[in-house]
Length: 274
Image 1 (cartoon, rainbow, N blue to C red):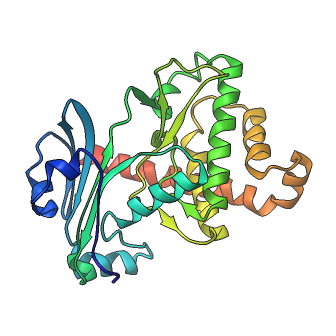
Image 2: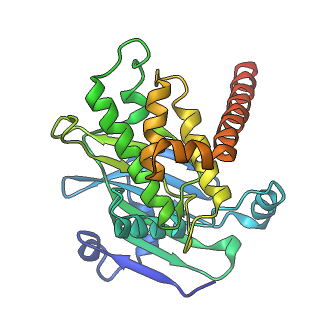
């Protein structure tokens, strides 16, 4: 593993002056959003501002091997998310702002790391924002602007070597101040803890992201024209070229979305039985 890392911006640089940040971060209190073995996420307030804090501890060799045997890349700490935030900033894709990050240790199964990001508020996820679109469609121009913005963000992200691995509309936050309009809107991409950063995004991982995004909008009332608009913006080419050259991708999107539907239905059924 690479050497230890520590980045502190204000107010954390002053707050933790003379302290061990890896100890100090454990003392933060607030609403806990997720607590798993080896990872905890909470919201804390410092000097009247909200922050999200993610604390990672080693996941152990057993969990690493389980992930690898399942053909999943294990998340070893906050490093993925930190690097993805920095890279998205370079690419002009709005995301979280990291204000404190640390990682130490050499054993991949026992790494300690943390990440503190500024709270994005007031915002609403695109999943919640579009809940009633199927029965109460939004203004056409606003819907088109949102589709265009999501496609632009996806294109920049993938062109810049980042793939998300949880690329659902629930991870796009729509900023509400000022109220969004077709001419003035801002979206931020969040939950990057599984993201990968490379010189270029492999086609396989690009396709997985696009399939997840497609799956997450199946029930919100989008039309075929809306989906074609996304493709035209994402690929930056005339639709006739996209439809002719990306036939394998379009078939893959449909098949992958069906696979995700089946998996989620199976999980839901299992949850109802417990």
